[in-house]
Image 1 (cartoon, helix red, strand yellow):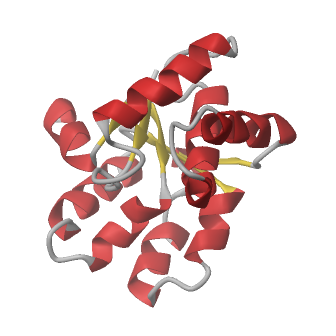
Image 2 (cartoon, helix red, strand yellow):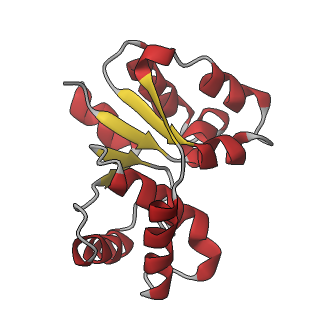
Image 3 (cartoon, one colour):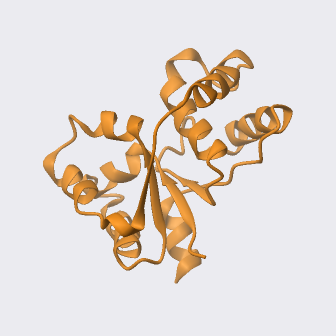
Length: 154
């Protein structure tokens, strides 16, 4: 079974960033080749509405058979609020928390993000999210940068 990876919005933006462009494009090639499934949410769609055209093109041109769409639910909102209430991150990070809750509840293999410095691919934050996940009866979530996925799949 091919891996299901939740792409948070900065991954799509990586095609427009000199530092991340090559690896991001390699990740999208893996989706197009059917090596991985790109899982995304309605929150991702909303966040991409004002993105540059190049970013939107990568999103729009993904083959339907290799993508999975998820709607954010009340359960996901509640888990995201639990992360905030337990002070894993501050209230201004609620959308990051929604991405994490969505990936957790839908049991993806990895959440993939370029957001290392702050809230998602940060070892201390990951521990906090996973402690809430376990306390709430969910599985732990594994987060990686696109570089980690490219290295592991090649």
